[in-house]
Length: 112
Image 1 (cartoon, rainbow, N blue to C red):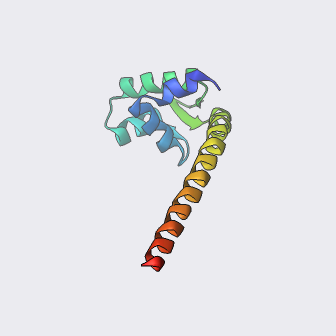
Image 2: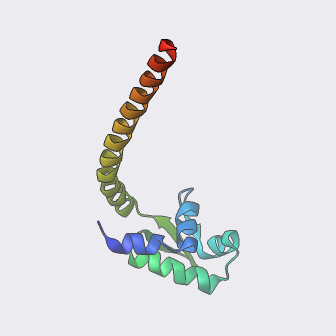
């Protein structure tokens, strides 16, 4: 798991940029407008995302178009999957425990 990915996504504006780019490629100006940032701020965040490998940029005429790179997000999902397995087991045990408590409560009520 690349820690640069988590570090880049930890900043709210960068996470919002990634969410915006899920809808498709955007220019720096479009990203800045949608997030209420000035272009230098948006460019700074995009540079961090690019350095982390989360976005790629294509120059078209005088515009820079950014789009998501799926590989780091796939890697992050695979890393998180290992935690899902652990949590699923814990939730299954909790469900079993709660069902046992419910059965005990029903049995207790039946004896009254």
